[in-house]
Image (cartoon, rainbow, N blue to C red; front, side):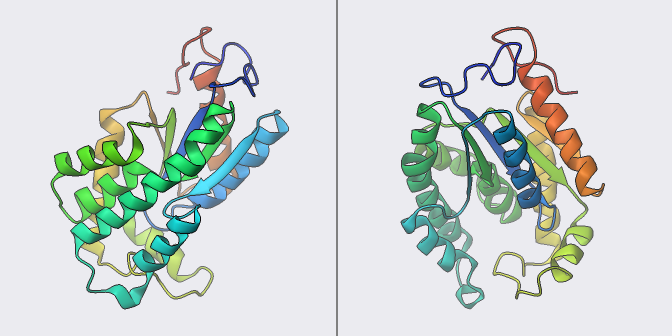
Length: 232
């Protein structure tokens, strides 16, 4: 939502919330960048809530455990999508909408676009069906701004394999072709809606990526009063 000439204008105003999502393929660094942006916005005086999908509610966390469990390898794509959607419906109703209604900022690590990318493009489910069910689950809630952190599939998976040492979850274990379709899907969505999406080359340093993210936030909400400013 437009904030006028100062990034902090309207903070805490009832019903004046800001919804920002972070998307990307495996190993893109979105969780790190979300945390850095949260700290920055809090320094600017914003009431910031960071959250993630799937999860962030007691129900959502139970669903998350099932979705990511490698032991659930027999799960079919339709089941996967419907479980994500169920967790998302709870997340929106219990966490995201209440914070936005209080005038706060919500930073979400993955949201509805992940279902289009992973289950729609990745698993090749019917995109129109995915969109309709997603719209129902979210009540039509769309982010104000979405950052897509882009890395080549091989780079992202290599980062994951050299990371914490934790076993890969069920989705990360899928093949290169699948993850390639996911990345292509993200790029297709971003190109179709440049007013919402900001594509960032995440092969750059953590500091440079965060610099670009902060600049995009400033540009988007420091435009003409009542309007979103340009980001490109």
